[in-house]
Amino acid sequence: MGRQNSVELQGPAADEVWPLLADFCNFHKWFPILDTCYQVEGVPGQPGVIRYASLYPDAFGKTSLSADDHGHHDDQRSIKWVTEKLLAIDPIERCLSYEIVDNNIGFKSYVGTMQVLSVNDRDCASVRSTGHLFVIRLKGGDLKTFYFLCGSTLQSMAKKIEHVLSSTA
Image (cartoon, rainbow, N blue to C red; front, side, top):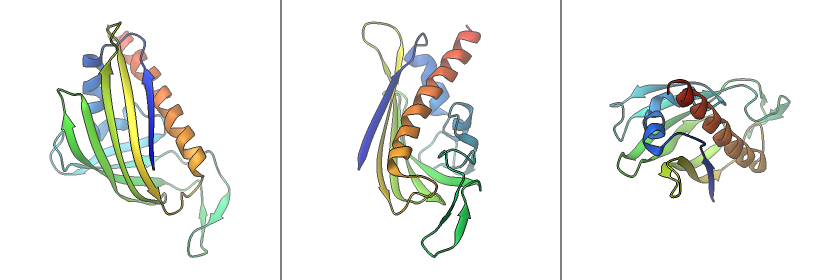
């Protein structure tokens, strides 16, 4: 199941935004739902590098208890995490692709792509995020919540990048 979100940034050019998102192992600086993100193996900036990322406990907006596939209860406020592998990175097209290697959120398979584009009529950036997802069971929320979270996270990321880049200008 594929889904695409995009956001247009007000101010920064694509060439200013790309280095921030190309820093694959530091996404927590820009994505408000990530508590931490760091390299666990591989060469930084190269396909094959693997990152670990943990989400803030309320990332899915739920704090109730729910049973997992084995009937065990999982406090939704416990740490949710993913390990992701960089599949490809193209600085000319300002695009990267990655896949989830392991997680405790419920993803069976996820391949994502992020691309920073130039807006034609202005020298501003647009960020497009595309994901192809197969879920066994999303712990702590449903797919509708997940897709809403993806869109709102991208909007929040854009505002954070705009703020940082305007402060350093």
